[in-house]
Amino acid sequence: MKVTERTRQGFAVHREERRMKAAGYRKHETDWEIHRGFRQRDVIVDAVISVCGRYVWTKLGPRDSQ
Image (cartoon, rainbow, N blue to C red; front, top):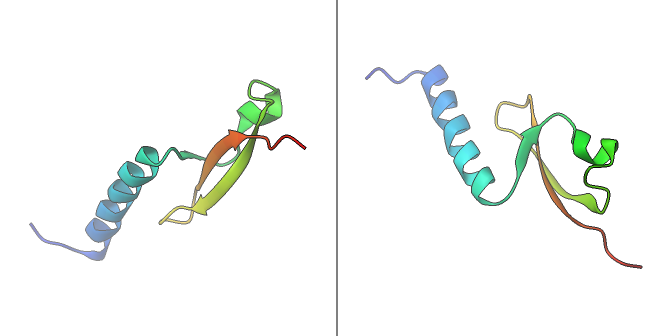
């Protein structure tokens, strides 16, 4: 198999996807479930920019009771 920069990038994206999904992150631009009210009690706890730079991985969690 000929390994080019494009194939390395593809492998990196697949590795990232497996790792982030296992950690409980979701890949998208914005989390519409929070905006629509479906997950009102949750907030974005952590956000990570994807390897390709086109998406954002977000992790949702419960709102701290204050």
